[in-house]
Image 1 (cartoon, rainbow, N blue to C red):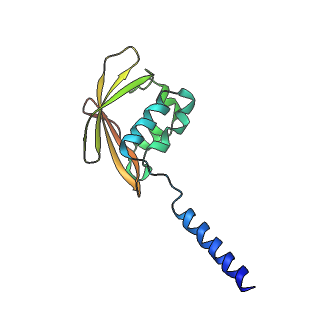
Image 2: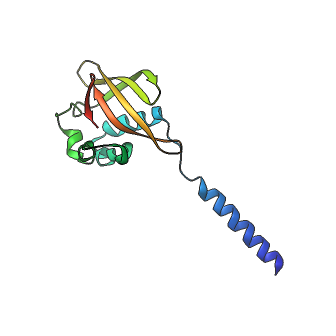
Image 3: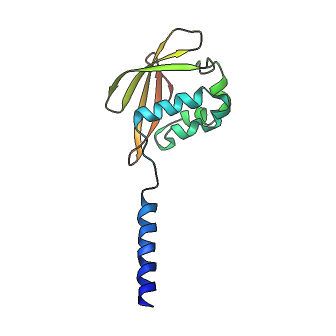
Length: 134
């Protein structure tokens, strides 16, 4: 009987410990790559809010949750596919050169916040120095 209790407690501890760290870390550069990957697949546009920190955004949250925004020409996101090159990284900001299909490269700044431990999300995007999502 005691042995069964010890085994049960040991199993409960193992399950608890493994459940504590079930969130996969996402670095700033990984988040940017995931953002571009989803942007390039129109079927994934409904997933775009997953890359942004709602708690750290103002009115821009309504933009990122509207899947039609990502297919519109308003801020140029409709020119998929995009390729990108990270040109600099300073603190929580990544500057990247994004090249839309058939167009010249443009400079974008992506501002990140650590929403959970080791989980980075975007809270602002500037295009050519002008905020387009914040």
